[in-house]
Length: 172
Image (cartoon, rainbow, N blue to C red; front, side):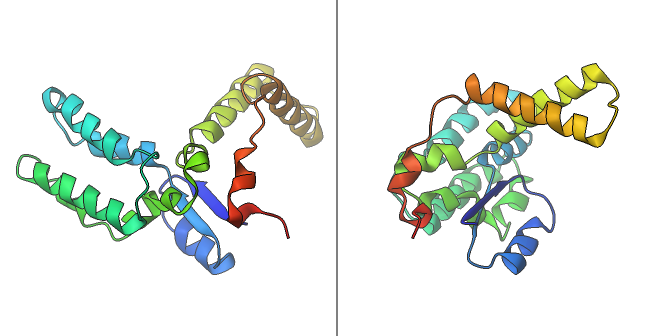
């Protein structure tokens, strides 16, 4: 396993490092942005979020530590007005939000968020909720598998060739 993409779940990063010490862990930047923007008053939120969006831009070619520094600098400019941002500024794991900068630009958009996973989970929940009950666990798995294949033909039908450009994902 080369990379894990997840939300900021307590204990998950330590578990990943224990079991897969060579793997990278990318925390979802969209969840971080959403959590940070909750601290900002609505009248300032648009300007603040525009700055965050530029900061997390996957097209830039920078190092992880540079992006962490940029985030801390950006948050510190707002800390006088919003002291609660110090809590985020002082987080020790900010590097894991910028792991995608270790990878080639062409695949960064595929690994910096968990939204595609959440979309699949939402689709599965909607499908299973309609059925309400299943005759066996196998029938539930069959339906979930079918939903995955259906999404693959629709929303996820575009093949991902970009991973072939990333050395970390090449097969030996």
